[in-house]
View 1 (cartoon, rainbow, N blue to C red):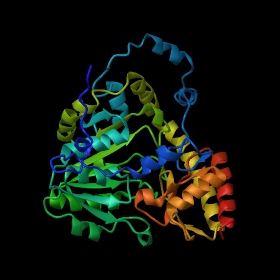
View 2: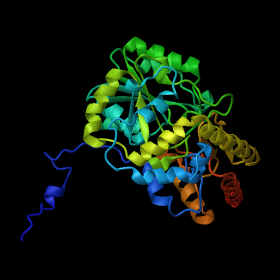
View 3: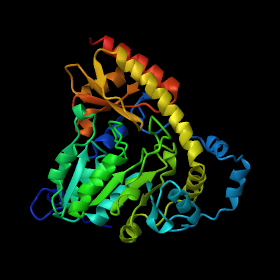
View 4: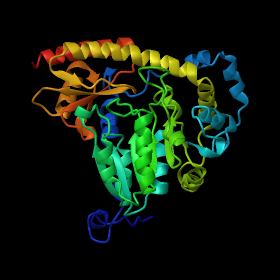
Length: 393
């Protein structure tokens, strides 16, 4: 049999007439893929220390008998939009959302992709508050949107300047994309600021997409702040079981927002998701029905670890920061004559400790640390980083 393969010229995607959708390489994911299986202490990790199934069962007041009940589960597609129990548990995380306002997705990454694909068309203005998860500007750029970036500043404690946002949100702006709590800075926008963003969006008849994957990890108070889906009539919130709920292995997320958006998203979702796994749905339901217990564990870990990280930063003359108010990550500014990638590669090779270079986040001169590992991992990692810094001081 003869295979008629394309010639080398036909593989040239830059030649006239061969135009494919271009999307920027995903900086953070490329970095993680390159190094996370080669490190000893992963302080680039952004999830709260992952739960085992046994730990989840304990938090939910169950035992191993629960696993035997899975043996009769028939592994069909299951409920396409997510089981009724799961969507009811998701709704309980919000003030005003009902089942018709929620759809289950393949992680927050799938939720964000679906919202952008559904709402954004070529030529639409999208305002993205950065730094943020790269989806929120690279996906609309790939669609051909007019993407305007509002850059957060350290002197503003990594919180957005609403006057600057207002100047970018012209009449007819399609979407404002924010991330709260913020990755990578750990900054937290409170209700007043979220309502201010909603007011700006309302004046332009714009949607607001708020990636809330770290919601529930506030350093103070009850630990869970308001959601944009509850604040603004055109607010859309995305989240998952990955970060605050310590269950990234389930690959289960959701979109909460107006019914019209959920219905429109469903059309796109039929092409790339169909449904999530039934086992994922089962364990996610268990976790979310006992959300307060799971989140209490996460807050204990993040609050204890951030206190240890704060003490460490205070002792390191080459490191400075704005202390996070929520989330699992912080940006560390370093005073060394080297790029952030050089810093992180040298650190990993010499100590086995993995950070994320600021260059992967368009934040050169910084590195991102994840501080929600087990306390022993964090403390040993910081000890090794101190040795690395002393050797370069």
